[in-house]
Image (cartoon, rainbow, N blue to C red; front, side, top):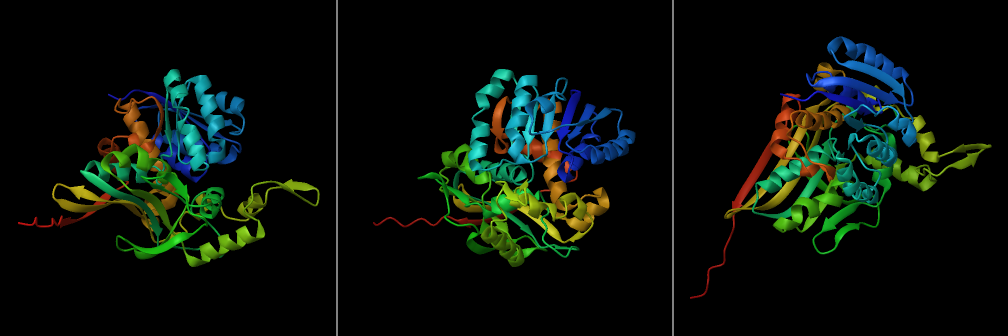
Length: 407
């Protein structure tokens, strides 16, 4: 028997719309609040969803940069899904502490930002609430996929998160399939990685260590690059070190034109989020670039191909070497036909709802601030599959060779 929940979705862009669409399919939903700085799209979504659920649906104008504004909609809410910009995570978390509302976000603003969020662990425990940091597809599914693989192994050598997409888009210009602000900032930051000897470190330049990685068919081989990402901040310490893991990283498959465009933006300073004065108007260069780009939700139905995110883990099991790639794959056209969302935002919006399912069922009862790999993978993957998001495992084993002792 699931507990009734009152849930708020803060940020009603592509991912927030997926979250809301999934929530109204749930018998445990008692009330849904949609909050955004612009209420027009949220009102349209609410009108569509009210006929699909007996739960109450309310829409509020909310400024995520203002803690008081966020807190004003949370006083009777059990859980908030922050699907807005990561730069507002701390404002939302502070509002959750005030109202004793549990919290889930899909990304952090930086590795340092994630560490600071996790440092609020005792504050959340004292308030009796749960905070899950980075529960989208990657981070999120990717962390839990890594945990699943690590749990199968006796020792772990390395954890490698890989994200690849072979799709083409019906848009003649620069675009990203998820938050443009996040894509620009993380791809142009110094990429982080982790070693057992020195902990988290950073490569000196963006787009480091280009290599080909073979994704499952029909994607195949793609060029991947180290990119700043949350998984490298936590996986080594939370699940890797105890089994001897030596190295953790994240690599993203990027098209050469995408890389070139970002390098030009960086060269011209158009990736900067610090405001400058232009003819008497104060504006951040990155905001100008983002304004010229389509919103990820607007690309629904225009992307054709496959998206794959997974954890590639090397280690041992018994007397064998073991390699596991635990992944999810989606076809953009098929996802659009079934859901009217594009696959990247859909893959990001479904995992947090799988966690909400577990909370409602009383199977996720942790308190405090946690990275998503601390969620038990097996029931999580069951809920994920029940919501239509498939996951698969490719394994490769070989015997451990032992040197014969001298007689």
